[in-house]
Length: 260
Image (tube, rainbow, N blue to C red; front, side):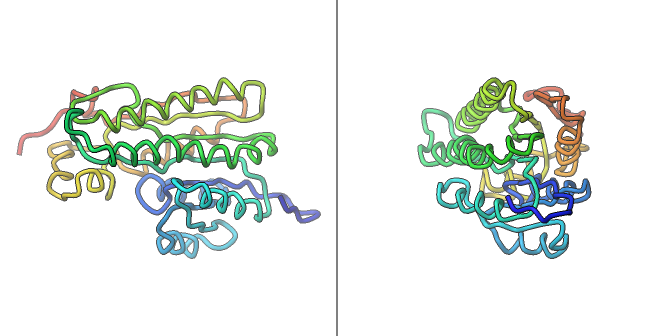
């Protein structure tokens, strides 16, 4: 890591899936918290707009596909070129595809969900863990889901991937015990973003129906606020797992919907 003599090193935060939704909101929030944010995602045009808006001193855009070993290696190399210490990684990239029952499940959809949610988290964490540990005060925040501990009909592929992701996070925390890296998991319930449900169903009507009648679902800024809060606690404070739902969602199967 390069260091200019006589200058205070920047705190660098890497956020995956930073081109939209929770990732974009988190990137903006962490800039406000004083981090130099490396915004990583596949859609370079959106990242460049964020970096330009934030300024070169506050943000760097890196196009990255977390399903590719080579692309993640490129992300790590780009981060290593920055002046400062990597103190925070936010594993936010993820997603769901389809609502097929197990009997009719799409293997391609399951493979995509596992590769993005589980192996993508693994790739990026492995690549940046040495820098996080070298900082002496590292934090890994992984954005999971309440699907990580509750199953539901039609959701086997996504819940399986999120269960696996939470197993990865819990194991990592055990393996890093005694080292200067915290491991945090944020598990949102119903969050209305511009793309999650649309990407899952490929249909705007079905995506909108998920939130129909729900007075105030969570939004991306709510989760960004939780991520920033957990990441900025004193280093000896580890928020192992934070479950966040809107007040209208008492449980995965219990959602209050107003009648139109």
